[in-house]
Image 1 (cartoon, one colour):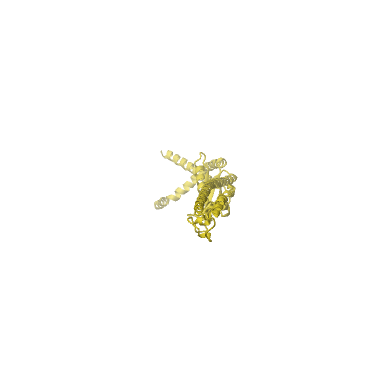
Image 2 (spheres, helix red, strand yellow):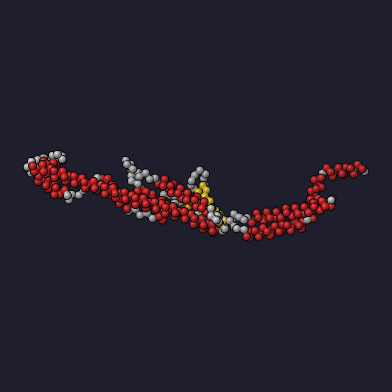
Length: 333
């Protein structure tokens, strides 16, 4: 009898965890109303949070550098403003380089706008990230707002704002460049005209000097058959009659210009006829337009409710077990 009693006590001592687990479950069962009440309270708080919490919706767009057509007027203007390189038929303006340059300026301005919005008193979340690491384009742009429609509209508006800003900047730069080029070309033309007038005056002086020699030598008729071989020193051989006729007509003779003069004038006319509209310049291309989000980022109703139930159960269980432990402690004391 004593052995059996000792054996039963030994079994109970050898498996204390089973006894403690059963006791724990019984305590929680007896305090189930407390646990249920705790879960209900936390659920109510979670539901209130879902109603008052600020929603977050994210609209996303994917952008690439502008295509050739979107920067065609800008590229053509650059080609007109940059003359053909000597010894080649190229102006040094590459369409691909223009696309990358304009796209890079757009990306930089968009990143700057992102920082400005983030540093406001009420920050706005505009994020710019490359789609492919190590490459500038395409880029993914996201905007977070309290509603799906606002997120889409704000993202579209900000993209258009940056696009117009860069296009206006490019247009302003072109206009300033055109003014400088026109001034430089007009100055070059005036210089070449002055040189041509001086050359005509010098030639007239040479003819007058030759006339003096012809009159002193009493040469009235040409003494040479082929005038192309006549030099400044032998011009008097043309005779005084011919030299007088040359003097009378030299003053009304059109100025003689080099080919560079007419090339300069042609460049000037091309530049003056440039008519660049900033609206024809587009600085990016949509791969995906700003979408209308269908799922909000936060708060997540299902997750919040599940966490509320778990948290409420844990708090209720803690209250029950803590209360029982305190009661047992007092009874032992």
